[in-house]
Image (cartoon, rainbow, N blue to C red; front, side, top):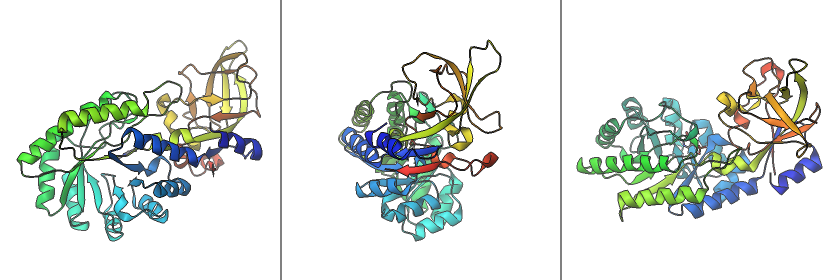
Length: 376
Ligand SMILES: *Cc1c(COP(=O)(O)O)cnc(C)c1O
């Protein structure tokens, strides 16, 4: 929690649940990332938190943007981003959205299939296109499975086809999975990209760009490697495979830029037990899975908690949200402990919740309103 957030909570005691996010911290994270990877252009993954104050600050810093929908593109443009600083990075796009992006001057598009490539050739003629390949997501706490990307051999054929369709075969992208805790994931992925560059050069297609995607982790409960470790591993692999002929490098950080800039403030609704001698207390908060904490599914992302009683005796807890849905249980198996003194009415902070929270909130499930947001 930054001093600005602490002061805002102290001075305003805003109604809970709410997110308070320090935009200066986003700027600091952007600068740290640029220092760790000075040769890479930053395309902020808008879906992590599309709030206007974040997009405006990043625009002022010279950031580019990775957008996944026409609506996200509009949000970037409204924040002052130039269309040529926006990459339409979703490999699954409606024709109407491709047309709107093309008409707005967006020139860079992702794809991972022949059908999508054909849509791009038709509705965004001449665009710079990059193919997303499948890579290992081992080491990622929020993996992306096989939903996006294609096999190398298919990527090779599709890039040749892109050229034949009159598109600009710009480069290759991958995503090693979100909250990636292993630097080796990037090294393995870069080796695969390098093979494709060679194959395509032999086929007469000279690629110019590697998009290293997102994945750079935030510290939650457990320690993670620092951004400098990722920078060194990535630059080491790039020079090992490309030598002096380095292509343009793009990165698409989401979580890393905004995650530790935000704090969710919530209220304890109830502390109870299921039996008189049950050692485990159930702690119900006024925010849960449907209030924005979607990444607690499978207890994948393990947020840290701060309470007014920290430092006192603690005991085991199951932590749940306020709705009448059994999946609205946040942590049952991850050995969370909270102070014995915790009781209903206490305010509890969930740390590093600036990413993938606000827009994951349901509209009004069980009548609960979406998360309030304060940018300071
Ligand atoms: C979600 C996403 C990102 C951001 O991932 P983080 O793990 O938050 O850094 C980057 N690129 C693409 C294509 C994405 O879908």
